[in-house]
Amino acid sequence: MAFQEELGLLIRARYPLVYIPTREEERAEEAIAAVASKTGNRAIYVWDFVDGYQGNPSDVGVGRRNPLQALEFVEKLSSTAPAVLILRDFHRFLDDIAVSRKLRNLARLLKSQPKNIIILSAQLTIPDELSELLTVLEFPLPTVDEIRREIETLLGAMGNLPAPKALDALVRSCQGLSMERIRRVLARGIAANGVFSPDDIDLILEEKRQTIRQTQILDFYPATEKISDIGGLDNLKDWLIKRGGSFSERARQYGLPHPRGLMLVGIQGTGKSLTAKAIAHNWYLPLLRLDVGRLFAGLVGESESRTRQMIQLAEALAPCVLWIDEIDKAFAGFEGRGDSGTTSRVFGTFITWLSEKTSPVFVVATANNIGSLPPELLRRGRFDEIFFVGLPSQAERDAIFQVHLGRLRPHNVKSYDTSRLAYETPDFSGAEIEQAIIEAMHIGFSQNRDFTVDDVLEAASQLVPLARTAKDQVDALQAWAASGKARLASRQSMLSDRMKELGD
Image 1 (tube, rainbow, N blue to C red):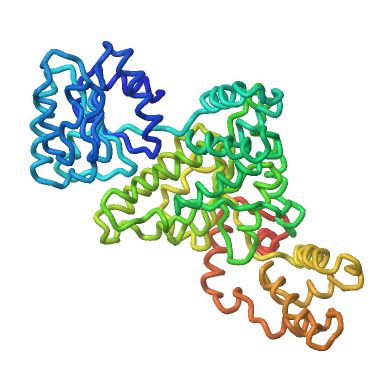
Image 2 (cartoon, rainbow, N blue to C red):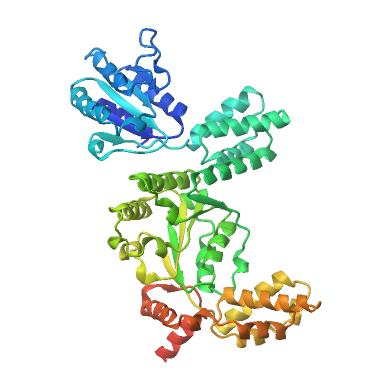
């Protein structure tokens, strides 16, 4: 349900206290005023701590620097006069016993009067004693239609309206920004060049990165890696390539739903993170990285607020890829944590969103320790598929050597015997292969020559792979995958070879 429809319903149903957490105060007040006008043409009263009530000359300044007096003002209004009272930043006073008690008294009184109190705040902070009385209503970021209307209004007034195709690109690039930021960045482009040109879209992307940085929850990742940069993992790559056009309008007309996401489980250094980056690049989608640990904050209720903010921002930037790295570390054994159920509530909000989301946010979650993940997360419907990324086979190690050497020595890559290198590096992951090559480069560089196959082999002989140092954990993970609980990412991995041997 759209924000204005839902708020209108709450007002008509005489919900006395509504809490709207948003940083877009001006736009939210405009939306509230529009709803109040449609719902019985209700009077609007706006209060803030510095200026008190504003608007009607007889009420100007009432309650200045006095939040309790601001609430007492409600009782002085006619009991039959419809009204909406907007209290800015009022969350700061909710812990005061007098304010809390007054709000609870007003909640009783307003059930029989056509009045509603709306608290506008940049953050969601609700004391326990008010949790049953306050109804939280999320205020979404601007929709595509709202952004288009704003751009047409601003640029059209200057006779600088882009062509339809350029306008579509401009609207898409503005998704995920607040209306105030959109206005600022358009004004910045006009101030720099006199007109807003398609080249100024880079300004919008930089503004978007700045917005995401300020949340301190998501990171905007430049995705430069390609599917061809992944050595091996043929099953996984085929699966991804088939879904490359699934976010297009043609796919919607065909009846295809948006792909939901992917869980990549496997040994460290086998290419899970690389795959997440390559998906975004191959599908031409922005890549957002979520550090789940950043969702958890010290203040009561703030973790849940950050989770909702993350979801809202990801959906506003859709279509996009949301990469959740090492999700197992965030939600491992949360049932036994002494955090008053915060982790449980964050996890519940997150998996509910995974199951019910309709927005084109493709979630790529990676995990090293599948045994520590709650089983609810692995249930079908959260992700489209769960892939196991195991240690590469000899043929895959050959391909991985070719990828790295082709990037580092494209002019003489054929001078390196990758077949020999692959044969001599059993149990090596992709990351360990890369590290062996880098160490070989140090050897060659220190001797003022190019590195050789022998240098790589010498470096590899000094490196003990994780498959040996953490053999028990690796074996347990491979046994889990061999039991058929996940799809193999590779046709020729060491695990698939082992499963074939067992079958024979």
